[in-house]
Image (cartoon, rainbow, N blue to C red):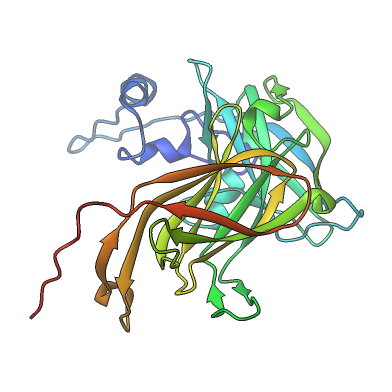
Length: 294
C-alpha cells in the first residue's frame, strides 16, 4: 500500500524484484505479510502507514530567477554508508519509473512520505537535442547533456550538505542555487595523432581531477571531430576520450561501419572561464576493424 505523504513499509521501487538488491529481497520477505486465500473463507490483512518526513524548498538561478520544471531528486545513505538513488513518491506517481519531483512555476518543490535517515537533494541543468553551431564546421545535435547541482552548492555528493530527518520531521526552506555565472562552455576537437585529421565518433568524459569521479559525458558525432560541454563548473578536471573511431557515413547510425579505432586518451584542464579550441590527440589502434559487405 502506498499513499502520497505517507512512508511505505518498504521502498516502492523495490517491489519490482529486478530493482531490489539481494539483501533488500530478503528484508522484503520478512517485512511483507503473506495473505493466504482459501475456499469459503474470508482473508483479512491490515496495513498501517505512518506519516512520512518532508523535504521542501526552492531551486533558483544565481540571479534570483526561479528554475521552473526542474527535477529535484534524492540520494539516501544506506546501511553501508553509501549514497544511493532514492525514488521519491512524487516522481513515482508522476512518471513511470520515478526519478524525482518537478518544481512549479516559482521553482518550489516538495518531497513527502520519506522514512527517517540522511538525504542529499540535487537538481540537474540539462539539454536535450541542443543544436550547437560553430563557424566553419557542420552543426551537430548534442545528445542529452546533464550537469548536477546539489543542495549546499556542490557538484558531487562529497561537496553537498546533508539533510538529517527523523520520523515525520519536516525540513523546509532548502534552496538549491544554479551558479550560471560560474558555469562555462568547453569545446574542442579530437584528432588522429599521426595524421592530424579529426575523428568522427567517440565519447568524451569529464572527470573531477582529485578523485576521478565522473561529472558528465558527451558523445562525438561530428565529421569535424568536435565535442562540446555546454555547462561546466569552475575547477580542475580531466578530459577522457573513450571508444574513439572513424566510421563510414551511413543514413542511420546502425548503417555506419568502423574504419579505424583509437586508444583511449586523457588530458587535464583547469576551468576558469569559457574554453574553446581544446585539442586532444588520440593514437590509432593497431587493430583495424574488418568491414563486411553484403
